[in-house]
Image 1 (cartoon, rainbow, N blue to C red):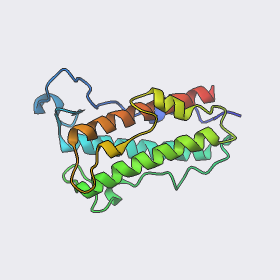
Image 2: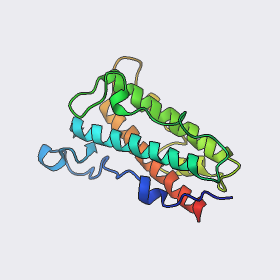
Image 3: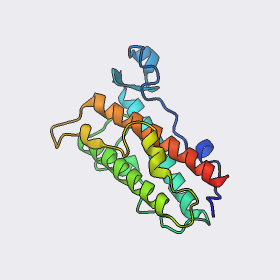
Image 4: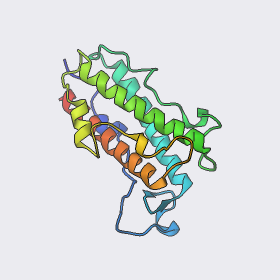
Amino acid sequence: MALTGGAYVATYAVTDIVNASPSTAFTIAANQNLALNDKGFQQGALYELLNTIATNWNLCMTAVEADGATTTTYTPDNALTALASQGNGITKNGIHQKDLVAQLSEMETKFNAVLALLDADGGVTLTTYTAVAAAAGTGATLNLDDTVVGSLGLNQDAMVGFLEDFVDKMNAILANMDVDNA
């Protein structure tokens, strides 16, 4: 049996605004709330990307859960915390570093868990979700360890790299879901 929900990319893909133009230097006029670049970014752009990821991920997990083909439970355990509910709340006007680290860590943990669930789900035809994620972006699984060093702070360049990897991998597994649906 295959996934029957369909249109996963069209419905849940995240527009890749991370390092959208790596050869162009970051400027407020060109990039304000439009892109995250390893040369700089607006906090509002970070918020918008995180919010889009959390929203689309949660909608996708709900759709996969509702799909008659799946035999595994995907929600609520694999839903991402809404940004407003994360610690002190993540907003476009303020982000506590601890809350940002918690959100990124949760994204990594739940993404990797869902890959394993999809590959093992007896109702899903394809068992290539981990391989597809490995082929997209960098590395076999998301690795936040390169981004967060204990409680010493965030390396923003590495955080942008993590987010770029996450978007690439998320969109790749959505495309795999569409193939599974065909």
